[in-house]
Every structure is written in structure tokens, then in C-alpha cells.
Length: 90
Image (cartoon, rainbow, N blue to C red; front, side):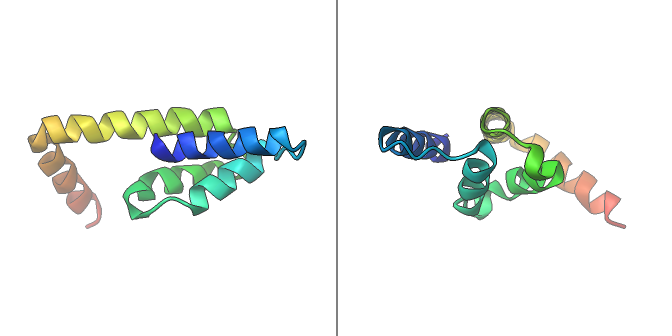
């Protein structure tokens, strides 16, 4: 969520100087600023194309972070996930 908080600060700054951006511009800039840890989130956003709103992106961030927390608390699910990915790639 840190990236989402940062984009909200930028949005507020742009609104203060009366230079708002569209949701698509904000989503695109946010996705370009993410590191490799968010690869699956970036892939999901690419699937939606230009139709993803900032609220959509926020919900994807939350889902992603909950998924990461779950994997940290239940490492065996990560092993199962990798096994399924490997199996489906053959």
C-alpha cells in the first residue's frame, strides 16, 4: 500500500496546483513505478488495459498484500502454488 499512499500524495499535490490527472494516467504512472515484487499486479492491470480506475488498482493492491500476508503465514500454500504453476507449464 505504500505505493498507493505515494500516488495519493501526488494526486493531492496536483489538485492543489489545479492540474489534475485522469485515472488512467495515474494508474499507468503508478504501475510504471512498481518494482518486480508487484509483477502479478502489473500483469493483472495489463489484462484490464486502459479500463482500470484508481479504485480498481487500490482493490488490487489490497488483494495482493492480503495474498502475500497469507503466504507468509502459511508457507505450505506457497509450495502448493509453485507446484501447480510448474505442473500447468508442461
